[in-house]
Length: 299
Image (cartoon, rainbow, N blue to C red):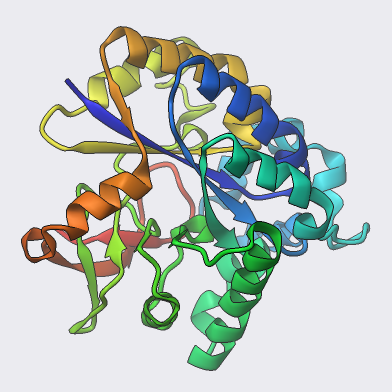
């Protein structure tokens, strides 16, 4: 039977406030564990409008109804409106997710800053940026984080070194086929990667070949019995406007006999046989349905 791990990227203040509780309720209904990765600092979503000049970005915005999904208020955060500090505003909610038994980790401190400027940061600047996320995580949860998953699947040699320095149990920054230790320009890093193996909703929505009524079957067709299936969802999409569609997907997976696994448990199992985990190159590459390049497990 297929095995599925769920990772929830939480990008915005509204997604934390509205999408996360909706997802928690739905996941509990299906007894499905998930790893919630929180954005912990300012919500500067409005600044992302600069990406309009990237190849493919305008097409993605047009087909995914970004305004409906995120709302006007969120799309003005950090530009015409002040950027709300998510960690300070939503700390009680985040702790509540942890107290219900869900895994929690770091998505980022400032989503916009990491996704758009990581490759312009020096090693020390990456340390500062990720250090702010660690500090906020410790303030909220009273413990060190064990995992992180980068905004927009943006990962560099500098960010991987900082993860190693933070002694994370595992990371989920990449797109790929199976867990691996990442190697960049000949240097191998010790924080194991558990990549997302399935496309995200926003990579399919609005495309003529993937109308909503065909998406669930498409995901069923993509499931593999011979390896872990990792699905990344977003609080702002599956937790809000597309919550009914995500419920249909969970039901279809459950009806198929899918086993849902906790990513932290999976990481412990993998590291118990560390020598059997392969080393693969991590490269930045384009993937279908997403603008720009993302961290990818090289074949």
